[in-house]
Image 1 (tube, one colour):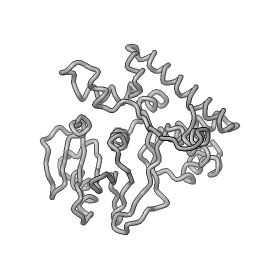
Image 2 (image 1 turned 180 degrees about the vertical axis):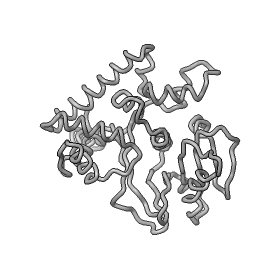
Image 3 (image 1 turned 30 degrees about the vertical axis):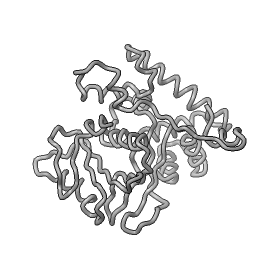
Length: 279
């Protein structure tokens, strides 16, 4: 496996980069009999991996060995061989840290500080080198922030999302999973598949999970695992950042809640699994 920069160097003259992602949720669902529980399939999709070959395994142990092999052979050995990083254990620690923090703001300094305080001393420069290698190899995707009101790109507060959530579960298990961040990861990859240019949105002191820029302009997406609570505070909080945007571009709130589609002051609330299964 070669990183995008190396392929550009090897191929003289013009070349076309074709980006490929693991199976979408819709593609994954299409491999199962009609009538299979969509909620069950979503749980399997995240935990069992969206890599096509993972569908060949019926035993969880065999699937874990396959995913561990991807981690050991492709991520670690290939990156170590190409980049000649001297510390395999440190790269493994950074990868696990990133899988544990998908969807969280992660500056290179905060990563270095957190790992150093946990007893894994690492410099900011080394973290930068590792993250560059991991994103060049399409293991993680970096998404930058954009100030919606100020109309400017921001240099801090970036986030990282993983190419496959099943790989995250194989490495870290399910105990520490943040289901909201995992859902964000799935939505991010779907927006990427649909051809959008994607940013995190900043609007005043609030944040919009995704600004998706396509051929027809901008769309805004807020993602929450659930917005149902006794007092309605969660729904109010999730809508607030979208409400703060003054333009008339489409705004969406995607949740796992099984409620009829609704409109809140023009913001469309949709079940995220229905959205993922759209054409």
